[in-house]
Length: 73
Image (cartoon, rainbow, N blue to C red; front, side, top):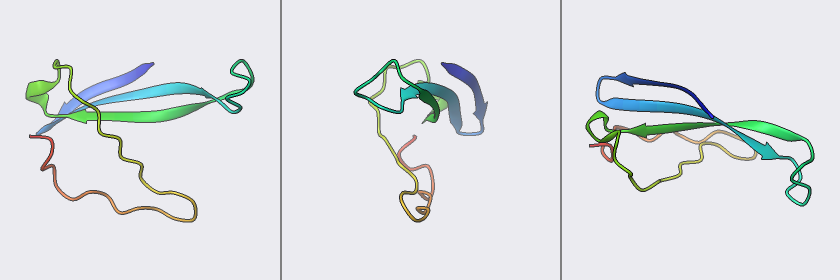
């Protein structure tokens, strides 16, 4: 579900919430909402672009953020 979308200088952002089952073997069981952020160049926001998944963090600690927006332009 699309929660919000906005443009800041150089970046268009879409925020989503996705329902994910806690037990994939029982898809109708309890679920959690996972936050997803989609980021792209504002000039290309209506294009059907390929997806690059970036998972920040992991068990036991956080991961550094990517520096700059080199892949967005």
